[in-house]
Image 1 (cartoon, rainbow, N blue to C red):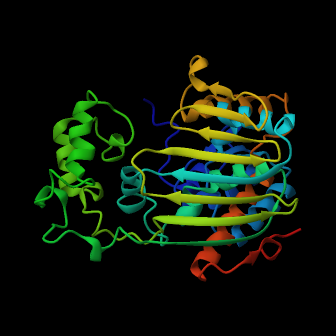
Image 2: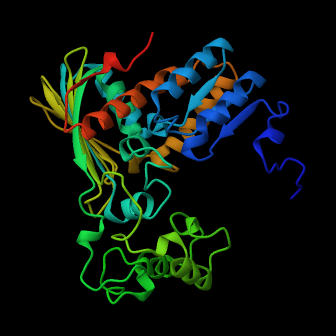
Length: 371
């Protein structure tokens, strides 16, 4: 592989425009800095989420993009899934009546939370966004899309309750390899990263490939959990982000919503219940099923398994690439997850975290927006 287009610093890379499209997938805290350098050069940008957890940076980037009439598409990949397309079709059809309330839960899964938000890159707000932004700006984006209106007010509660030192089992060690609970603890690094890797037939994929840049072998993984951050006891890390959080929302059109993000589930996936004036709509991501439940009439079941070749994120990975191509080729003038559309969910996340840190205080979103 040629080193011709490999750069070891930002200044060298941004000396000139090097392509039509730039994908920004750096650490969360540098997304805006990279985009600010790319926009004046004329790049079209695919920007990883979250954009930023700082309101002033969101405003600054929005105004810069407007100044240069720049194309910036945010990786809110869930907008492009089979499930989201199906849900939006039901919402637009009106066949279940008027939408009244949305009850949405994100099951992060106990091991996923430990991997990403206790041991991993998104564990501490000193260098990453809070959990409600880093993990759940996807969900807030979907909720404001489903409501078809901007959030008017919200309140939020939650905390870091479990993954801290006072909950550590008696006599446990700082690292799993030295711990007497290594064979029994649900969060054992040996079990999660070595035993399951071997059971799954030695896969070179997430979450295992996060542990090392080397090709994965048993020896590489053993070294990683012995020396690296993913081998630390989950009760003895430097994490500070909430492990559960609830948000209650009122939208300008009268629709209300509740959102719960929790680490304390065995499996992952989102569960969403829509309450209409003439029925219910249930989505269970883990089952790949959407069920329409009219008050009069038979249930209608939509199964993702009926489709062929659904790739990652429930078809969202393919969907976002196709949407990007459509926007770049001129087939569509703007992406659904444009910078302008995507900033709204970030404002909601910032407001929700402010509310949580202030004991669940009701906050008005107009105080966070800008014209």
